[in-house]
Length: 349
Image (cartoon, rainbow, N blue to C red; front, top):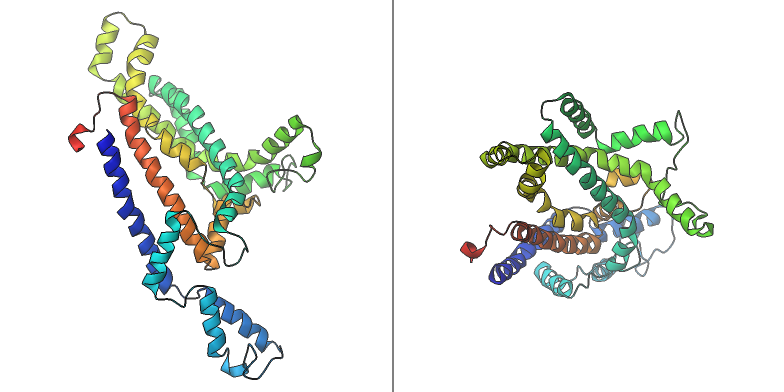
C-alpha cells in the first residue's frame, strides 16, 4: 500500500506539470493579453482627448504608445522575460504555494480565492449532503421495488429534473418564488441579508438558509438522477446474484439479506466516490447559478479571470484545483481497499 501511494504521488508531478505547461502555452497564443488590454485602455483614453503629447507623454496620438512605455507595461506584467523562463519561475513559486497577485483585483490570488470560497462551499457542501442523503435511500428503495409504480414515477421525476438545466430551473424558481410574476417568498441575491449582523444567532442561521433555498434547489436537482440510478443499478445487480437467493433459502428475512449481505457489496462503488466528491464540494463553482442569484463565488471569479486575461488567477487556481483533484482521485482509489478488504494493490507494486 505504501509503495502504491508513493508511486501515485510521483505520478502526480508530471501530470501536474503537463497540465500547467499546456495551459501556459495556450495563454501565450490567446489574443488580447493583459499588456494589449492595458495598451488599448490607455490609447482609448488618449484618443478621447487626454493631453500629454510629446515624446514624454504616455500616448503619442496616431503613433500610439512609445516603445519605452510598452516595455514598462511588459515588465509590470512579467512579460519582459522569455516564456520558458517565466514558466519555470512560475512553477517554482507554485511549489511553495505562492500564486502571486491578481492583475485587476489588487490582492493576492490566495487571498482572492479565500474570499470567494464561502459562496462556493455553501453551494457545494449543501448539494453534496442533499444528493447523498436523498439518492442512496431512494436508489435502494427503487432497487427493491424495481418495475413498480413507485419506481416508474420516481424515475420519471428525477429524469425530468436531470433534463432541465440548472440555470433554467433557477430562472423558473425566481419567476415563481423570487418576486417575479407570482410570489415573493425568497431573496434573490447574496448569502445573507443586509441586517444580518443585527440578528440573533438563530436568526442568522435561518437568514442564511433562507437565502440558500433557491440556489441549492437549482444546483441539486440535476445531480439527483445520476447518483440515484447508480445506487439503484448497483443494488439491483447484487440482489440478482446467486448468494442472495442462497441467503433467502436459508430463511433470512429480506432486511437481513439486504443489510447484512447486499448492502456492503452494493455500496462500494458509491462510497468510493465519496472522498473525491466531498473534497470537490469545497471548491466547486457554478457560473450560471452564481450569476442568476448574484453570488460572488469561484465560478464567477473563474469567468472574469479568463475574460480579463488575469493569468495569475487563472494559472494559480488551476494549479491548486488540479492538485486537489489528483489527491481526491487517490483517496477515491484507496477507499476501495478501505471499504472492501478483498481488493489489494500488491499486484500493482
